[in-house]
Length: 118
Image (cartoon, rainbow, N blue to C red; front, side, top):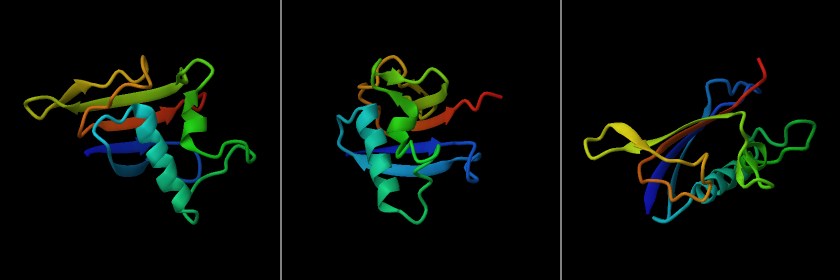
């Protein structure tokens, strides 16, 4: 098992500073599997969930952040996706924009923020 920390910031419902999640997931989990686990956590907490949003059209983070037609993260989503290197410094890059099936490094911190068009 590996631990991944997510922070997802949205310009709605007080989430400008981000909502944080810590997940424990199988060692070979991809970015998509990690994001699906975050969606599962969100779905299980119906009293604190932000979904559905956008007039009921968007029901989870996966739908909000991933374009399955191109098998990629939407271009307007800001990404910080690093893990500690051998010295414990957060500079081991997870190339999840290039490959959403990338096996995320253990102890990664992933921050996602859709552009609001400002």
